[in-house]
Length: 185
Image 1 (cartoon, rainbow, N blue to C red):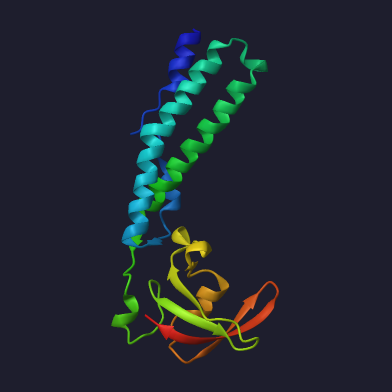
Image 2: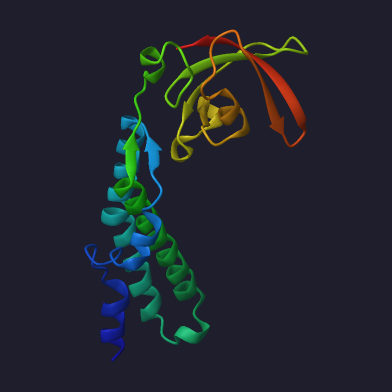
């Protein structure tokens, strides 16, 4: 009996894990990504399916072998990790399925109008700060440490459809800030 339970818990069928109505409910919204971003999502998905899933399955098997599951903290940890991994796999599959590739150099086609994929240099109009350069990407790829901001962020929203030389007012939690657009690439 315990072996049947172990097999059911540990064995994950990658084809059936994320199919069904749950994934259908989340595909209405497009996931805007660059080619590089989509590649990273696919790599993470493959790693989770082929490496992490097996590691968690092994941890579950080991924890189950310790006996009494009601007081087995290793089992609880492994189950929580399994839930996290399976949830992330589902999330990535949905994002990949609904992915829409954005052009890296979209601004060149639109006469330097800022769009997703544009690289923009901005500077605060007050305070004499140094110019900051950002690439506007979809929310999935946003990473401020790499100077990639989401099109859904306050700055990203304010910059979309604007041109070099314009000033934009950005509503932030600490108040409104004014930026001048110095360069669009």
